[in-house]
Image 1 (cartoon, one colour):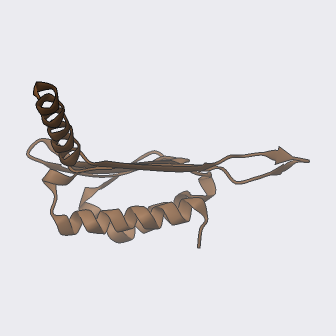
Image 2 (cartoon, rainbow, N blue to C red; image 1 turned 180 degrees about the vertical axis):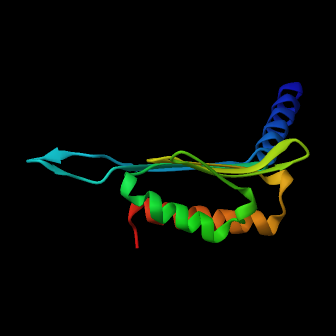
Length: 141
């Protein structure tokens, strides 16, 4: 009888822990291959989405950089934008913490969003923006 109670308590605790910490991750990739002097497309995308944090990391061919920057510029206020050399950043700080960060270099995109520091509407807008960026990077139309 004690073993049954112990197992039930253990299962209940496991269920509670899993219910509180839901994280969704996804990734996709392709690679560059060179056959008879012809280069093929290269990209990789990784997304992590937890209850409090969202991140997207991507590598892409440099010819997509302008389209990615345009998409970000069209969807994020200029007040958060800075440019240093070939690096474009959109960063918002809230009470000394980074609420969101979008960083684009020649062939990389890094997005970090602290869900607790932005509104649900803003997060949904940024998540949709991430989906649009994934489409651009993976060439899926």
